[in-house]
Length: 81
Image 1: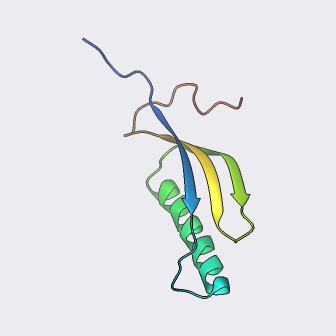
Image 2: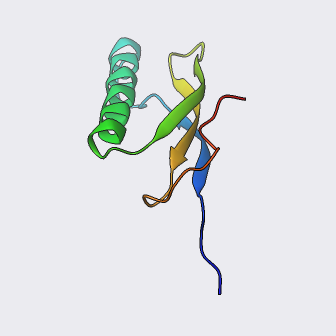
């Protein structure tokens, strides 16, 4: 028998600009979408750590994030490297 002792997702997420909006509106939309994403993680009490956050030249946002998977214990995954 096996049991999951700790689980964590490592994701690279790209918040991209929408094509049907003007550039400044698309950048504002991306910033709002990213803020909403972080708020949702907080609201659901998902453990997470953003390892890298980069605003690209076009205004889109690229992040590398470690986050809790299905409410499993994260073990040492959230420790600083």
